[in-house]
Length: 163
Image 1 (spheres, rainbow, N blue to C red):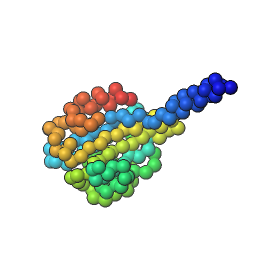
Image 2: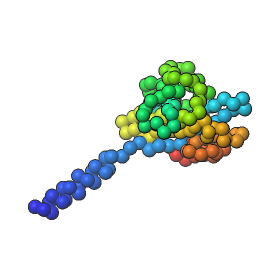
Image 3: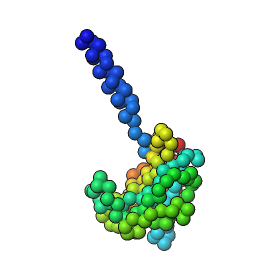
Image 4: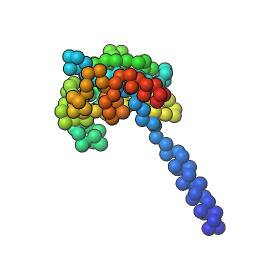
């Protein structure tokens, strides 16, 4: 009887571990600063996947878990994204975004631009997280992605290899 209980407990634990999978976070989004100092998004989704969002969330640094967005926007619904580049606070008009708070990068805030595959298995999320300090440290022709500065070519390769 005791062996039977241990066997059942082992199977339940294994099933719990296997079913507890979360979406993989992929470096499919980057940000950069253009020659005029404007922040731009570089978006490289996987193929023609249906995605949810994207959204931009800006929260006071250290309070990211609060979920309180004070500077960003949200695109509701699902869409098929294509490779895109656009100003950080001016996403494509057909996304019909809802602006939230101040529409500029605020010092002392952490920003996250993200979207997620919107299908039954929700395999991945495309995410970039950054601060004004990260952007200020970028050299000309660099982007911020995967928590670091890199060339646009390096990002393109990273995004392609991630899909």
